[in-house]
Amino acid sequence: MGIIALSDASGQFEGVLFSEALQQYRDVLEPGSAVVLLVAAEDRPEGMSLRIQSAEPLEAMARDAQKAMRVYLNDDKPIDSLLRILGSDGKSEVSLVMIRDGGAREVELLLPRKYNASSQIAAAVKAVQGVVAVELV
Image (cartoon, rainbow, N blue to C red; front, side):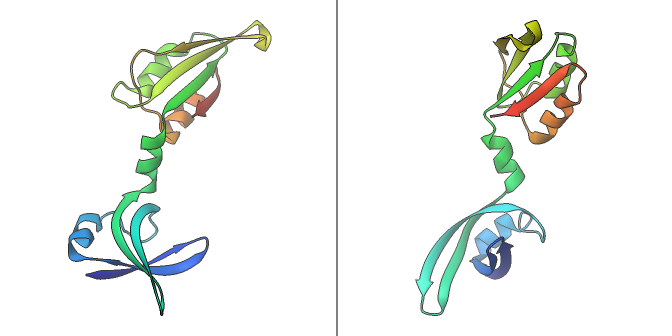
């Protein structure tokens, strides 16, 4: 069994892990790590008691939560570069939005496969010349 100290914007608190959970989530629960915890809470006379049931890195959850990326382009020249950056083994839908007639029209094309759509990849895509904007939705 282990007791770990945690903090968030509201203050500091403690959580209890039993040995199986401690062994399983030891690597995730490093000092300074941003994590999402599933806890069981019990209101006791001495205060709230938290038992940690699972822990997952916040970045991993955010990456998995990304359902789609929309890339706005002013021409088709960067498409090959974008496909290299996106990779081919992701879980997210990606659509390309071509801006036409000075912004008066937009043509959106949903790519046929699933791609990676993390915030890091979105930043790399946005840096490609010809990309106007990137949205993670």
